[in-house]
Image 1: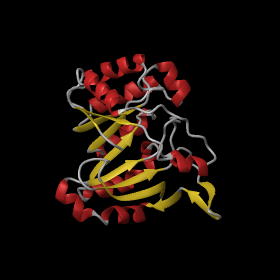
Image 2: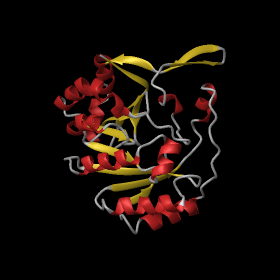
Image 3: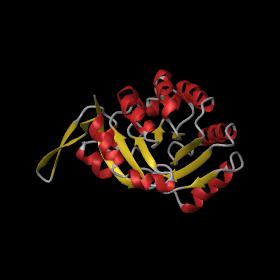
Length: 255
């Protein structure tokens, strides 16, 4: 059995507690205009040319080889509650393929984290629940019409899956909110975000400015990255202050 990925990042410090190995899985059912990993959206392996060389985004790796990569850094995990983080793309779309690996990692007491937009079939989430120690859940566009037309999302499915998470035994849950004026900062959306995070006062909340680091990958894929209005430090601090009224566990991060 194989997993389709785009990258393995060792010594990651932003994808969960401690030193982590982050696995970027290929394939996502959303299409966020600000996505910084556009090469992870399409599940298919994508060919491109860079400086005259033919290359590919994405490759298949066996469970055995992927576990070997993860365990390379095991000595560091135990020192600071580090572990492995599955990102993407939407990693939960490949949860059935990941199961044998997750079983092995659990047996070795490796901390397991998932980063997810949570807009996946609930049956896939239910498979993953028992393996997850940490989870980062995106809060993006919460208005139903815009979530569908802009993200290709299903907001009702999102809320249903969030309820599954809240009734689980996962202890470390963090909301992550990308901040941009064009979409997530709109008044109706901010109001819905405020309402949502107030319902989960024990969850952590992280907000961050979107960036254009992935622009070069858009060019390689012959895709255009939407231009976004710059968010100043003052503006994101004001948003943080406003949202803190609804959840005191909020902070600004840089990604």
